[in-house]
Length: 67
Image 1 (cartoon, rainbow, N blue to C red):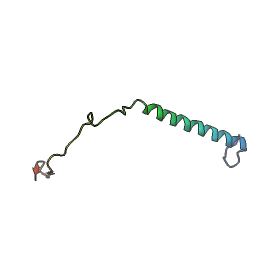
Image 2 (image 1 turned 90 degrees about the horizontal axis):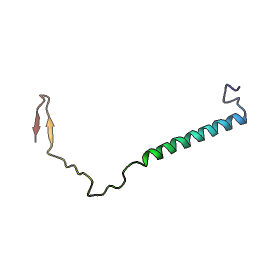
Image 3 (image 1 turned 90 degrees about the vertical axis):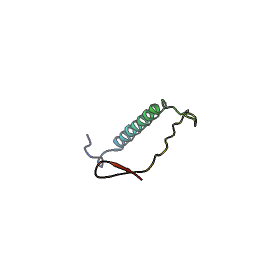
């Protein structure tokens, strides 16, 4: 058994690369599968618009002052 990556032989390096590649593909596949349930059909009519109100300055007394 090789306890160091420096003294490992070619087959051990190949196993590490294959395991890392499979893990990367699994993570990417999970991310793509988790994203497919999102709703991408939003249009301008269904979007909610939030408008800013008047500016407010908060004081140290806990009350707010409208400018």
